[in-house]
Length: 323
Ligand code: PBG
Image (cartoon, rainbow, N blue to C red; front, side, top):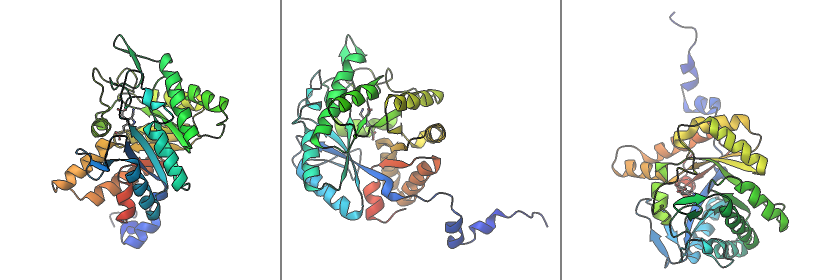
């Protein structure tokens, strides 16, 4: 006898593997992102994200309605405004694209849970996430605009706001503004450990939000750091974050695990645009099986410790019966 210990016994059949599996993914905890555009006439395919379109409000309503029928409850909204300027004025305009989309969605489909991305980069002519002066992104003056943006999303009827800018103190600024205006119950999902990442490339193409000069490394995190992620999530929780996010997900599974171990709030992970597009590209060139890749990636993100995942694969998961 060469061994008494035979781990293969628990791998012998699908039934035994299913019984012994440590991770079971609850796909109801997937969140579907949407790009709603003020200028799109109907649908505009996004070249770098096959299967994802920029949509008008009418098409957004159609998408969310059919997603709800499939069982997808969570909507993450990104807005693409008609006008970009140096103060991101369309971001906190009560008649801005996100505000209009939220009102339309909640009026027609109150059962959809609508989360809004709170950031300024899509609304700034220079594409940075804050006010720029002399080539620098200013922190504190930006907080007021972020708070105004979150407040206008809340006033439009959003169910949750998700600040993604990485300015210091923005969760506290948003919490204060919400509380002062009676939105005591509005949860904040904070992009707490958000890294400066090449994996956002397709998103910036989709949202037209690539910075016109420089990069985001003076505010988004350095991917060499993990302790700093702990610092960021603890700070955000201190400031009032109800849920903390790690972003991206796939190259950051260790961060998801570390964060899950040190916080007592739910942890969200963002399976970002570049992670999605890599799967699409691999599948298209026949290098790997799309369903198997996506399933393995999403499962690994949950296994690492995510309680919920934002993914562009969400609709396919439900429609095609993956996971
Ligand atoms: C806005 C924002 C970005 C993403 C989410 N919110 C882009 C960025 O920070 O450049 C990226 C999402 C994705 O890649 O899917 N700041």
